[in-house]
Length: 517
Image (cartoon, rainbow, N blue to C red):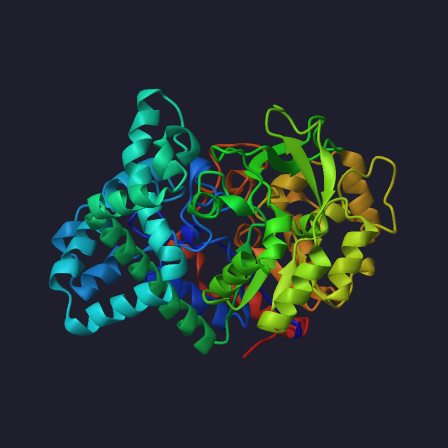
């Protein structure tokens, strides 16, 4: 993939300001694009856009193809005539600094359903034709997803009665769990209204997102999206294509994903995602993955593949194991897969997450297809009790052009929070590396220092989390890996997009040869 020397910001749309408790695809999203363009930034990196499941994580979506309904702008539904001004005139007093998903969902979901009913009954012929075309084009995933969601909303009540988390492979009747044809026919007829509503809501999302992406592209801003390597167990993906995953005859995983014990965790990380049946995937010509890539690139301009190493080798944990300690490394057909992608879809704009302990085989796979990797500056300056290792690949002098440099990612603490928590020997090592032996780097200055390192790096792309641009502390952190709840909540306030912050971006873009437009 060709990479020009540019820079950008990492920000998920949920973190945008606005009156409805969560960032959406309305006016503030367009204002953010204007902010990027004014700051001569070419990249807006986001997290996965799917409808979130347990823990509100965008990396545990209910579908790999659907969009998150909570991102739909209610204001735009008023403009379209599907809601009235009165419908949204008195929202609850939402937290303006954090997304509280439960109250946001409780208020917004009925409004989306009301809008969808209005659309189905009153939309103009032109809009109805657009909707029919959308349903036909997206039928390969939309039909199963709309039914899955309709069923899930009903059967999840059984789980709530038992104070449990509902999953299709536990709480659904066996005939529909295993997709018997007569059961599918029965439930499609019984849930026809809910299915239609779910399809309209997806139509809303896609229409609004496509319009925002077009606006961004027109202003010289490229959208960098994200594909999680694995999918959630409780998803339409697994239910609709059970033979593509390693499941038992009831649809429950026999092995699950994670990573083995390491420096950061004595028990590793047990993510719990079902693992792919790569034999069946390959036998089918990797059609499911090809569809997933096409669908993602229908929404974004560049796609980042999360946990790329699992296309080479992945940690397989028996499903009965409570931790990731006992597992094994299994091999995936990475070369065959990406050769198929190249043959079927051409040279795709793919970047890969190649962080952590990466074997040489994974690097060779990455470099064989010329995929840009990632460099995280926080990783260059952490855990230095034994002294700074000059061969550390994250140190600026080891960067390469075909890569993206970050101060940190959504999984890291903010740079200010990270630095404040470092032991003194790590801080001293940073100062020595940066030739600051005689002038102490204060906590409040480190963010500026690392942003300058990122912008000045030889990496063609430099991306800064919005929290670092605003120099925020740990309370603005987006995600703590291994923590199931309380993540993905941070939002910034509207006044943060001002001439001063835009000027910082613009000046740095010119100074370090990254100005765009």
